[in-house]
Image 1 (spheres, rainbow, N blue to C red):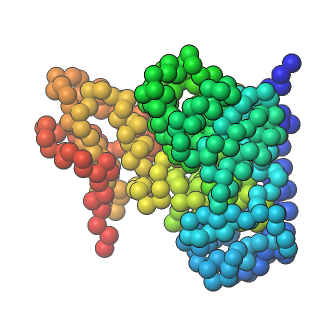
Image 2: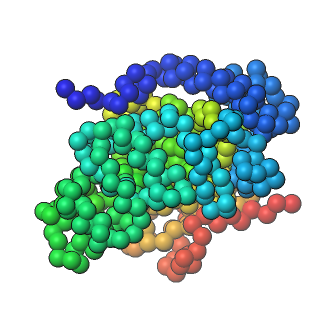
Image 3: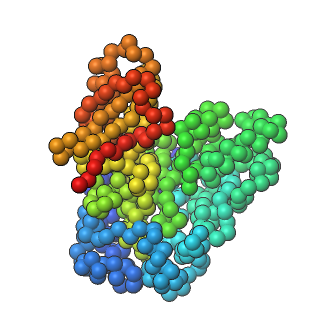
Length: 421
Ligand SMILES: [Zn+2]
C-alpha cells in the first residue's frame, strides 16, 4: 500500500514532541553556529547572549533579527560569505543577484522539498519538467535533488522555450511541473495557440509552484479548466523551504527542519496565532547557520489541526511585505486581509478603513459605499464587524455608510490618519 506521508514519524508527531524536537535542534544549531560561524558569534556577543541562554524557541526573542540588507552588507564587508560559513570546503556555490553568494544546501533541505512534493501527490514513476534556472541560482538543482529522492524522473528544461517545453511534455508524457504559475500559464496558452487540446494531448497532473504567488483565479483555471492539481511552496534562496501546502490547499505546513517565527517587525516579539507579522526563520543548516533571519514577508500562523493529518502549524500564506501593514491597537492589519473581508459582501461597492487617534486610542472606522441603498444597513454593519474581527483580529469601532463617489477610486485600502506628536 502506498504510504500516506513521506516521513510519517516527523509529519504526524504530537505538538509536544515537535516542540521538544525543535528545541533540541535549536540548542544544537545555536551552539554549533556560535563556535563555527564568526558572524553568528558576533551577533550573539553583541546582544550579550550566550548559546546556553537559547534553550527554547521563545528564547530566540533575545536575539536581534538579521535582515537582508544587513546580510548583504556583511557579505560585502567580509566576502564572500560574511562570516556565516561554518565549514572549510564546499561542493557548490550559488549566486543570486547582488551578487549574494550562497553555499550548497545541506542534504536535509532536499528531504524537506521531497516531503513537500510528496504531500502534493508527486510519486515514484512520475515524470517532471523543472522549469527553474539551472545556472547561478540554487532552484533548479534543489528541485532535481528532491525529485531524485522521490524516484520521480526529471527533465531539466529550465526557463523559456515554451514550444520546446510542449514538445518535451508531449513526447515524454510529462506528469508533473515545477516552476512559477505564470510560466505554466504561458505554456498552456502556447499549446492552445498551436491547436492542442491541453487536457487530451498532455498528461500533466501535478504542478508545484514557488517563487511567485498563485492567484485564486489562476489556480481555479489550472484545476478546473486543465485538470492540474496545484500546490505552492514558500521559501527563500538562503533560508530554503519554509512552508508548503498539502492537498487541503488552505495554508502551508512548516517543515520540522526549520523554526519559523511570526514576529512584530518593530520589536522582534513573537506573535500569537492569527496575528500578522514578519516571517523570521532559523533553519537547522550546519553549512550556513543563519540564526533568526527576517524575510521581510508578512504572514500569520494557524495552529488549527489540518484534516490531512500533518500536525505542524501552518502559515496562512504570504500577505505582503513588511511596511505595507498598518498597526492599530497593537495588531498589524494588512490591506489584503481587509480585501478578504470585503470580498465576502457583494452589497459593497467601495470601502476604506480609516485609523484615527481619538483620546490616545486608535479608532478604526470602516467607510462603505453600497451598490443598493435599500438593504438592511445595521445587519450588514454587524456582520461586517464580526468578519473583520475574525480575519484581522481587531474589532472596528464603527461602520459608516457614505454617499456614492465619496471614497476615492483607487485610494488606499487602509488610510492612516493618526498624527504623532
Ligand atoms: Zn495539511
